[in-house]
Structure formats: structure tokens, C-alpha cells
Length: 186
View 1 (cartoon, rainbow, N blue to C red):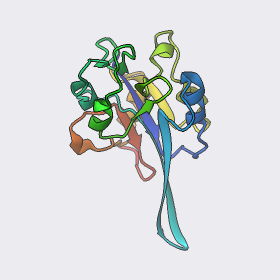
View 2: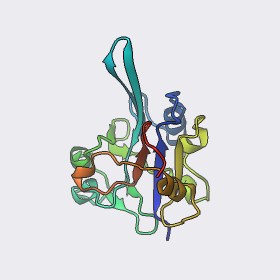
View 3: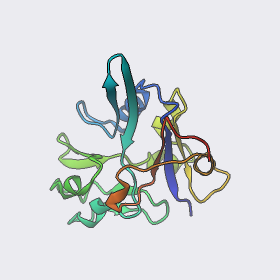
View 4: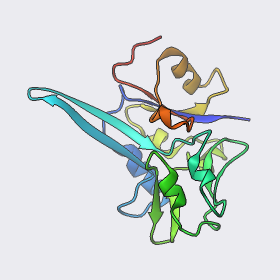
């Protein structure tokens, strides 16, 4: 069985937001809501400024607090893919999963009265396709694949480059890895 993950190579991200547009179109995300986002921060003092661009989405954790806190079991971890998914017909919109997620990766779809989030485009992956955000990434910074396949680009990138996860101290064991701009090959 595959163990899906995403690597985001920040050295290649140009901040074009194509990933956001592709995600919104593919998943019919309502205006004002996002399954993925790009955060831009500026550090330093003029004229010595440094800009950091970081894409963020659901981390599809191996230890997902959103799943453990969902009273209706609408949030669940797919046993075959390891993806953290939602059974929207079970969701009552209580927002327990929203509060439990340390990554702020969920939102309430007010039109439908349910919580929503990135699903690693599980509907596309089931057909042998990759995620919409990876498909449209003009800089090639997003890579999706199977962590357990040593030939996958995800595995190869993680073998070559030091990578970090967000909030590693949270104990969630996220499956979204970041190669930082300053990361040197191993």
C-alpha cells in the first residue's frame, strides 16, 4: 500500500498562487476559503530584507488530532492511502477538528454546513493522477508521491535534501515536508 506525502521545495516556489487557483477550481472551494495557501513573510531591515514564501495545506498526519477529536468519525485516516479524509455526510459542522488541527488547515464551508480541507486530491489519485496543485505548479516546487517507493521523486528528494515539517513538536507526524531555501544537499 502506498504511503502518500508531499514535498514542497521552497527554493523553487515563486509565489505565483497557481496552486491555490488549481485547488479552488478542482475542489469547488467557495470564495474566501482555502484548502491550500501561500504565506509570505518579510524579515530583516531595509535594505537587507529577505522574503520567505511557504505553501501550507493539510499535513495528512500519521497521528492526526483532527481525527481523534471528531465526535462523528467524519474525519478519518484512510487505511489504504494514509490520507486524512472527510466523510462529509457524517460531518455536523461542530468544528472540533478545526480546533484540534495545529496547522489551521481546515475551514467551515458555510454553503454546505460542513468542515472541509485538502484531501491530497484523493479523487484524482484514485484514478492514477497527481494532485491539482502539483499539476499546475509552474516552479515545480510541489511534489507528490509514495514515501515507501524509493524510486518516487518524493523519496529521492527527501534522501538528497534535509527537509523539515511544520510544528514537529506537536507530535502529529506530518506527511508534508519542506525543503527550505537555505537547505544544502545531504
